[in-house]
Image (tube, rainbow, N blue to C red):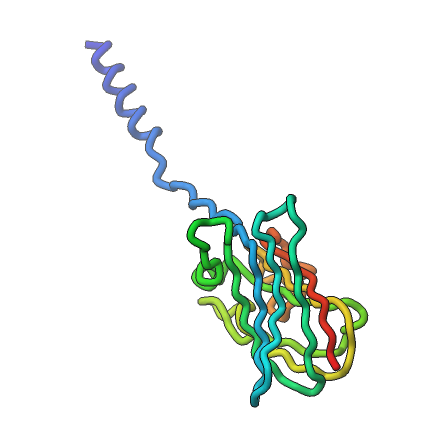
Length: 187
């Protein structure tokens, strides 16, 4: 009889303590990105400017191919980012995934000293909480300059940290999914 009591107690304890009602959240892995295109379309007409990054074999191996562009001073451009994983078969459109997981991603844009003050950039899209993503932007050229225009995609940034909503990467944290330096000239 005592053995039966202990067996039941052991069995009940096993079921109570072995069930975990708080399953861990699934890990959202970083994206594999082998192609980045930043298409700038002049408001009011004119030729598009496409900044392109292509690294079909991913990190290591063959060096990436980066194509910059020339922008006209005193113009406003609408910007649209497209990202692909060309290592997948067929190619995987990462843009849609970033848009769907907008709360977990943000693009940051910065320039080298030769382009400081040459243009202003504003986010034109937002995630479900109203924080910027950066897949679409508005870029207005202010003055001539030449240098490097950097686009950085952060995965799991702290969007509530100081300056992050305004595009300051300093306090963003998170992991970098992709970072590309494009040569850009404003004439």
